[in-house]
Image (tube, one colour):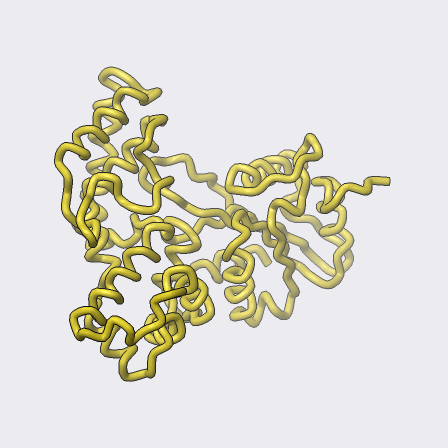
Length: 316
């Protein structure tokens, strides 16, 4: 008897085949927010609720060697296994039982490499965290995180305006290099890993450091697996795609969610400092709690959430 925690891949697929309580089975990559985010989306669908659903973190399903692991690569590896086994959709006497693999898009709409399957559902923004900040009731979220009355929260939201768009505009040089680094498979300090731009300085991290930018460009080229004329061609192609995103005023879609808490915290602090009310908000735990407050106030009526919900419903 298999006494290891979680399910083997074959065991979980057998569970799906035998299921009479659910028709949709969703596998998520992130442990912090993904399951709750996906649950809110599923609960907002009459069809999905009627058919029944189950959400599991990929770590609950062991890989081929019996090892449990998380992340996007583990989810896509399980997808490949299900596809090869011809078990993306199974049928029992109650009807079809479909499995969905929910993963972050990251930068792949620019760099390429997205799987073309209705069973692989990508975030419409860079990742789940970006959705949480973009697809929520910001006034309620900030009122909760900063412990504000409604009027103060409304004034704050009016003051900070479209802070995500402002960030994407200011950080364009860093964003461009992160996407280029990904596309040319560079192995250096430039990329989506850091929680802030590494080529901007200042208390608001919005002042471009030309020397740091030049160093970033050199580090990318020196460590890229793509070399020679091909490197120049790929770099030019990626920068051209990003330029079109900015021209369409859709630059917020390029932001990684991990970049947002610190920048929002700065915007809120700047507002209260300007009013000389430095103790007028809950600044002690704001940065760590603000994403959970946004998640709690997710707006299920936004276009992004409707698209994700539609992708899930299409599997039923």
